[in-house]
Amino acid sequence: MSKLGDIAVKVRSKNAGPFWLTVDIFCGTPEVYAQVCAAVTSTRVAALFKADPAVVDRYEMASLSVLKLSLPRPSIQGTRQDRDMHGASFAALVAELDV
Image (tube, rainbow, N blue to C red; front, side):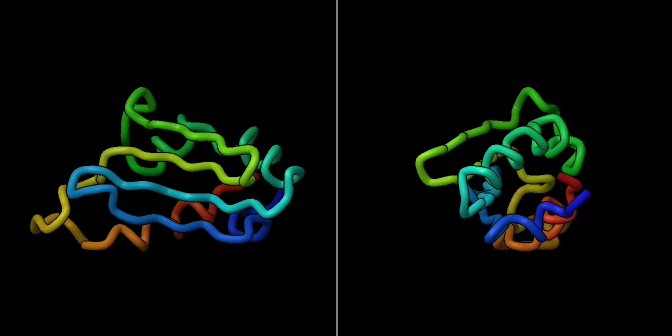
């Protein structure tokens, strides 16, 4: 089994406003894209962030070989609980998923 970060061209996360986080998975080829879409479910991503799977928005962009997921940030941007103002470090968690 491979780690997502080993087969994807890039896994990136960023703020989508102060309350939401977006994770982009750039797959590079249609084959990798199909593998990633099958393995990286909304439920698995929600579990990483201790979120309800029902609130994870999933966007599959086959023509670009990109999977995009948006979900509420674990803590609101800028609060004392927030340890990543830009939301960039959350990609490392997703990149460690087994695919």
